[in-house]
Image (cartoon, rainbow, N blue to C red; front, side, top):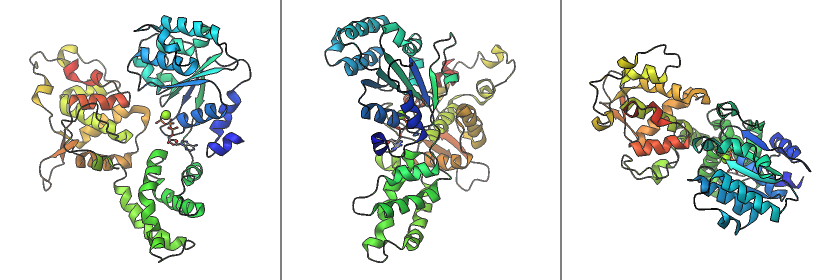
Length: 417
Ligand SMILES: Nc1ncnc2c1ncn2[C@@H]1O[C@H](COP(=O)(O)OP(=O)(O)OP(=O)(O)O)[C@@H](O)[C@H]1O
Ligand SMILES: [Mg+2]
């Protein structure tokens, strides 16, 4: 129960995990998957920390090299001197050897845990890495469990060559009730928890149908709370009069809904973006990233190649037809070409694939991308025919974006075939 007080909303997730922390023998690997912001990282960290278990957590996004990943694991498990035992560009077998050596000196009293966050990126690293981590216990002969966290289902993960099968654990999306409980925990120091909870209730009433992402909702709550308490500060309304407070805040929330996908991006970034370096941090909403990817593909691929790239069962398309010899000029040299909305949507739905995009918000996100000048609308507003767009970001930029959603951009670009 002491954990319950720390991890707000003691979900079934936590209980399930808790039961998996055994006394003696441990699972070699556990694969935890679920949509964004379903508490994968948070729950697992809280659990390991509160139980005071020995563990290492590594975010695969931050590990630019495998060596860095090995180093971080050893540092966390065996202390600051341990990493110096690794050579400069350690291979997997170097890692295993050093790990074994350190184990002898510090034999495990409890199971050690290695958490690999954003584990889907392991697939892009050396091919032997993922299979090795799945059965690390056996390789290093230590009581160690590797926990992989990912948004992607195991079936899209498993190497063709087969591997040790981890224990699978799904983190479902938070329910409305759970979101209410978790968000209410952030209550404002100058106001009662009851008032804050009432505010969250109103917020969820407006946003839950379009947005279930805990991070996004928390951000919206923080943005709108001061507006909510404005009538209280002015002494116009009493705390108990939630109906009046609701009537006051509702129009603001409805307005905020129009820009829910815009967030603070527009304020925090210089315009225009075209020259922005690939390393600049742009936190676009998840589906906006795919929209931008689709827009880039539509701008730089010839339309006639869409079938080949994006139609699942395109039948036989002759290679000679596909790669026309005279078309030597790089589309990238010619710059972005305008495309109509329906082509953008067709590509978008093909690349989002099983990640299920909510249709209603797509149009809203397109106009946000235009506002942010990541997309340009071509032609005049009063033009009668359907609008056309052009993608306004650089190749570096789109490659960086696609990496954050694990989309293999280069495979879909005609120029790079
Ligand atoms: N049960 C919870 N109680 C309190 N806060 C939570 C809970 N679950 C998640 N959060 C918070 O919500 C945010 C998102 O959670 P978290 O980072 O664990 O999601 P995730 O599933 O790892 O998402 P991603 O796939 O994007 O990595 C974090 O700020 C986290 O602290
Ligand atoms: Mg996470």
